[in-house]
Image (cartoon, rainbow, N blue to C red; front, side, top):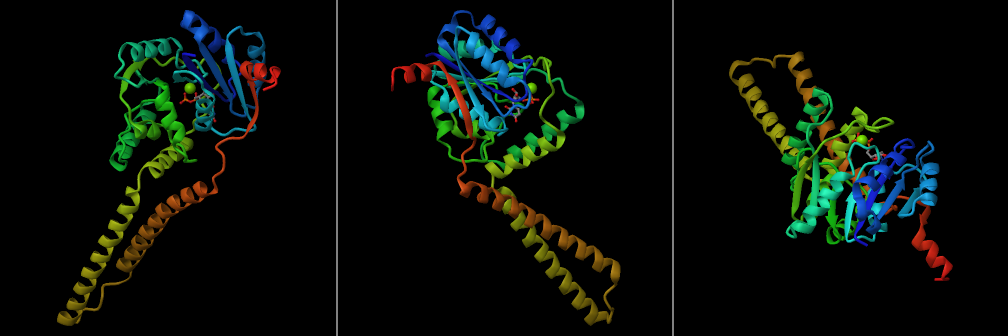
Length: 319
Ligand code: UDP
Ligand code: MG
């Protein structure tokens, strides 16, 4: 099989059919050689019903992975990768913001320019508020200053890559999965193409402001230990300052008999010191909690059922 398309779906009941029709239209003959892997990430609406229906009626190769609850898009992606059999693998959102026609374009690039292992699409101009986009910009700046791997601004998970890159991604065992970082970490030649972001066809985005913020912190903790170094440097700096000011106070008292000027300075220093301590402990805590989660070795998702015609055929043949 040539192409596997992974589509993580969480509460996308109205988008499934639209997405499928658009894909069939955009792919043309390619659809015969493609498997569509829909991952139902514990949707609470009728997404699974729609998917079941599609599975029954579609003449093309469709796999449905049904999670036992919501595990997040990252888990959906990895489950899709593990199930994918294609030589090329695509990841695309179900909400019609990322049109399937770009997948055909990506595949063309990969086939005509063998130097590339991956084609990633970045939004041409994102239809989002100035505040959010300013925050995102500063996030990428921070991220790239902190991390050893370079994370390109505004690339999404919307990409198509070769089998060998998929295998590399699957081989990373970590459970705190930050796919933007993982894609950079595994390396390979990547070609970047712009794509026009459409409006979401139905439903709403699953990202809240707080969610994005947490995602950013997770990303930094997953791909960099620089915050720990910064915490140590900060601690050392403050020790030096404290030492110098102690020396100054002692000399002043000895020379001028001047009692230490009071309460406000004390409060400021105390608050500053405690603040820094708490900050550093928080940073430490972030890494500790990540280590804790990793040591549990929990699976990234729990699968409730898999609908796949290949599996059905195998069962029938008594394998
Ligand atoms: N998604 C998912 N699990 C989640 C959240 C999102 O599988 O917990 C899917 C969602 O159905 C969609 C894609 O991930 O296909 C992108 O989600 P969304 O549109 O909310 O993100 P945005 O496009 O706003 O970045
Ligand atoms: Mg979306």
